[in-house]
Amino acid sequence: MTTDIRLAFAHPEERAEASAGADPRDRISLRGHVVEVEIGAFQQERGQRQRVRLDVVVEVRPHPAPLQDDVDRILSYDRITEAIAAELASERLNLLETLAERIAERILAEPHAMRAFVRIEKLDRGPGALGVEIVRSRAEVPVRAADDGAALHPVVVFFDNASLAAPDLSARLDALQQRGAPVILTVGLPDLARARTGHRPTQRRIDLLAIEQNAWVLAARDPRCLVVATRTEIDWAMKNGRMIVWAPSKLVLDAVDGPKGSDPVALALWLAEHLAAQCLVLHGAATGPAGSRVPVERG
Image (cartoon, rainbow, N blue to C red; front, side, top):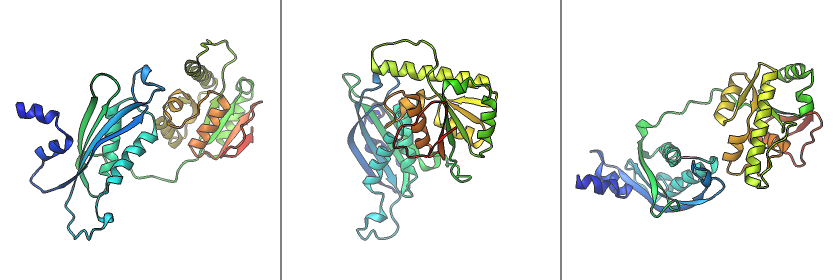
């Protein structure tokens, strides 16, 4: 029991050694890698960066051929730090467990890696370090499905309130479907009074929720419309030929380098650029901001 307790708090390198199998494996490690990141499920953790410390140990097969002092023949330390940086940059996460899983999966995609120990600790959430540790092996990592076709480039569409309420809405949706590309519909703020907080971060959340109310109004106007909030839902809906209405809160708030405000047209443009859309189509009196990386059309 004493040994079990000691190993429970030991560095992942010691844990790896204690649980090693009969086959000899080499180990490389990253100790005390501290980064500042916005992460956490609690409201007070949003909009705040905090320090997290990462310790990673990777077991690798001994290289059968002479190394010849060639860095290309080994799993470089840089691949570990790059895996961490890539997952931190991909999206804002709530859970350390999710981050650890993704880092381990990315590391185990390397041809040399056989088993990964990942420990992540929050350093600023209390008097001690709060963290998680996972162990994953190559055999446990699910194989990612191969790409079953070319990347989908949707048409992103913005409806102002006048066009949203227009009697020819169904005809406009028919014309959009006839383009043959996935269609993602976005809307603006509803013509309704909404709470005013005088506090920019909370007002942004209220505005995003108001936009989502309008998204449900659009969905009620035509049965083809499916309201979605996550990138996974968007990808599934595009692949299955559904007409999407975007509820922006989750993607916008979770984005590492996302839009800072809540202007609806700017949000639509950001989504179009984020998804490498064919174009952004503006219906009604809306005007697009300058400097777009995707073509902007009038509907």
